[in-house]
Length: 119
Image (cartoon, rainbow, N blue to C red; front, side, top):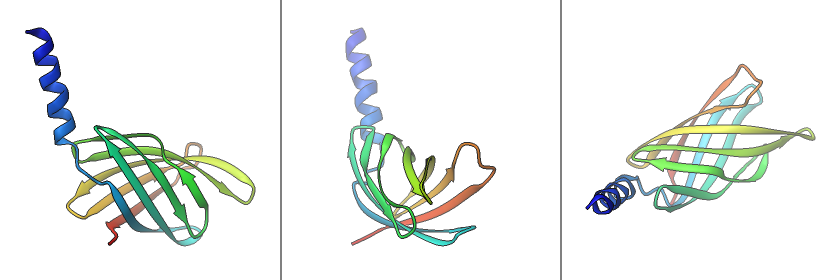
């Protein structure tokens, strides 16, 4: 009986995750100007994978991606002027929009991205 409850909880968690599979396009205003970023998400249960590319920082793989209900989080590695840095994304899905807050450890700056599902 205990296993049935555990499995039911797991399935409830998986079923409640937002399906963001596919291509999304976002923009952010940064100290470097407007940054455009394309996200290609793949969702399996509550695991998020895929890749992202931007007009300023190139292509990056999505690492440590999770989706829990409407909450999304992942990390990417960006390269800028020969330096690599991790960028931590946390977002909230609302219909066809995801609002991300991005932080780079060591920098006292937060960037806000608004991404919309691309057709």
